[in-house]
Image (cartoon, rainbow, N blue to C red; front, top):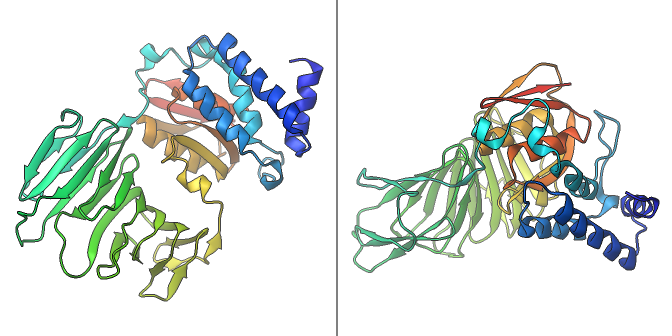
Amino acid sequence: MNDNLQDLLKKLQNGTISKEERSILDAWYLKEAASKSSIDVPSALIEEDLKRLAHFNPKRMRKSSASNRYIYWAAAAILLVTLCAGLYYWPGSGTIADNQIAIGGNKATLVLSNGEIVDLEEVDNNERLEKNGVLIQKSDNGTITYTLTGRTSRAEGVDQITTPKGGEFKVVLVDGTKVWLNANSSLKFFTTLGDYERKVSLTGEAYFEVSHDKSRPFIVHALQQDIRVLGTKFNVRALGHESQTTLVEGKVALRQGQVVLRPGQQLTTRDGVDLPVKQVEVESFLAWKDGYFLFNNEPLVEVMEKIAAWYDVEVEYKDNIKEELIWATVSKYRDIKEVLHMIELTGAARFAIEGRRVVVSR
């Protein structure tokens, strides 16, 4: 990189870059990505990087107390170009064919209320199933949609959709509510509409866009939290000893109305105890739904938990570095070696791939 481009990167990092200079930097990134990538990074993914770059605001970055350095989203995106050329021969790892570590995708199992099990990977796109007066249709973008046909039984129906490690899926419920299910997650949901509440149960992680219905409040049971809404957008993580609700839009109530969240607020319940409600940057908690890993000053152990769930791998730590804080963002539809190398560029850790195990060291 010549001195002029280095100057532009410095201006980007301190927030003084002009629109004209930003255009020069974007053009350079596109050119470098096209010429240096030996693994044929799709142009659509490059465009995604640039979109993230376009919204980069260095003044919102915080210093990492663990590593005493700044890690910038934009710098990470640009550095991705330089790692592409030698990625297949990255020391400590093999080729994609050697390791057989696949990128996650649209995979889920549906268990109907009558006990029938449906592997959604085996269902053809636009195929229609009708069960108990409910029409279920799979579209070609990893979505199943439930529609009432008018011939529904009065008996309450409950179906369950489960994603494995390395899987994700979207379901549109009979009331029009949209739910994005992250990897290694499960959702039990209603298939009929009664006169009162709409109830679902979640383990794992999901993003909800709840259809407004004042007469039928929407209730999410998420291990240690019960979330009551009328119509709103929010993300929920319910894993083991911790449940976390992050509100994007609208209003939700927890603890029988004792806790009310406003947009941008988050409540975490750990081992049955509510932590103080805090204001957060919601983008960090929605990145998975939008196709990105976005690690916003997160401990390395939490970063690796997300990576392990998406790529279906095991993680082994050689050194005591689980609490090292990470700043980085990258498309989750890239090969695992690219994602791990992005984290290596922060200087927080080193990685080696051994079969389906990722070894983490200092």
